[in-house]
Image 1 (cartoon, rainbow, N blue to C red):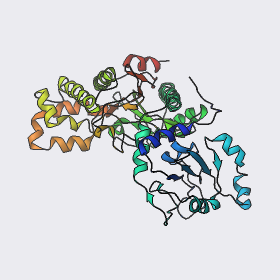
Image 2: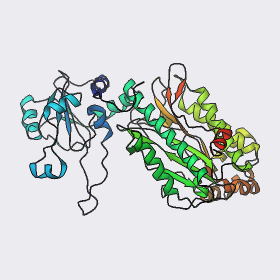
Image 3: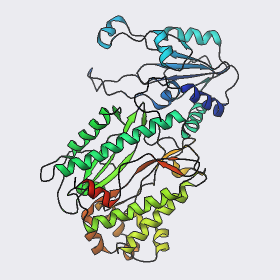
Image 4: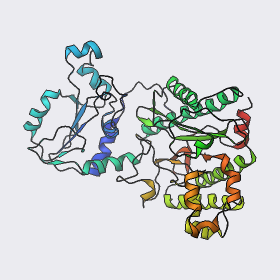
Length: 445
């Protein structure tokens, strides 16, 4: 396995070849893309943190701002277009790489300076310029297609190449260690005041220290009742210390624009209460049942239905739901406690492309080898959701309000792994423990 650091150039030409296969470009056409440029905050000169546009990175491997790329589809020649940096800007930003350095660093054939782009295009007179809506040059005098390319790129990005898989695996491994570090840290700080922001900072530090300088998304560090909020990112509260309280951490680092998406939920005091253990065990069972069923050819909707059945059966067994299991599923009573999808594709984006611009939930295609996806069932005692569902007259017969109040202090539980679909089943990139006994053992150390 190839791990951090990487000294070789990223083989993005392989990505282009796959995109070309799906694009089926017209003879004499070109592909033109521009990356993102730096942006300043509001009316200041303070730069915002830069992250490259994912489709541009897929074809260029360039993480820096201001670049473009031009590809001649007849000859498969790739031109990298670096930004022009005037000497006065070099005082602030440094001297840019030479053209020879750029050719050695990136998987391209030639360098084309910005000022030469328009004359070059007019000289070769392409039949069609395939680009994305985000491209900055309109080329008004030529036929421009900004629809077919995005479809081809999204289809190509769905199936990962070996080097992409290596990046994704590494990102998940290091992020797993960061999650593990948070469990240990909370255990060591027992009896002291801890803020959610402290755990976020620690997670970012562990990732950055081990080759993941950026986060795939804003970390979620949700403690106590906030664990029932799906995308809570305030991360600014004191972590409560009641016996039922849990900490839900949904976070993943990013390596060369390839990310990870992992969620772990663990007890603040190092031991799950009986109620917290019951809810956690239901979610874990749902995830394990889905993971055991993953393989090429499986439909994602089938996996989603499997998870729903396990979650609904668990809520029925502990008395939160009442009635017949099949009827509960049919009327959607479980949605009071489970109101998101089972997972999504992961790659250059946290919620990555699902094939032809669709999410996994909308795909009618079966899972394929070398897809990377998440499996993330959850149960949440969210006051807004509970009030909304239990106040509907036709649904009151399905809920035991006293049982709901018994489990409400648990807040929420989500368990999320990033996995690779393999020929025989799956490889779980997420290596942080998730069994109840293992988590409690970690928090005793």
